[in-house]
Image (tube, helix red, strand yellow):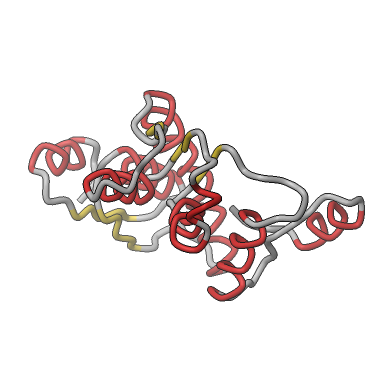
Length: 177
């Protein structure tokens, strides 16, 4: 998610705690998560995570606080894998919900949202026109399909790399190289 510093500043000015800004370093990133987890005048009872970072930090740095958590909701592949690892190690002591594999996430967010975000991200970071450009999309799962379709719609020549032969055949039948 892109942070708009002016919006964050306006929210902070109105008294809403803001722990993110555009251009933050990795050290800043972890400081922001720490401030969200270990804030004044409140005790978290649930973790809504994206990537497993808040869960990881709370378990590692604030184990006593983690014991007060009633549940975890995780929306990313990385975070879900981290939860499985915690469970396997016997460290996941609360219920956890895998939102990443829900139908609404896999069939809508992964496929459709990435169509918007890839174009926005590439336009902002490269400032080039896409027409006629050759691009490679790694993987042809739901996210790869959305990215490939969006780039093709902008006039790109899209190449797909894929290790699953069925997905590779789908890419070929959808007109990708």
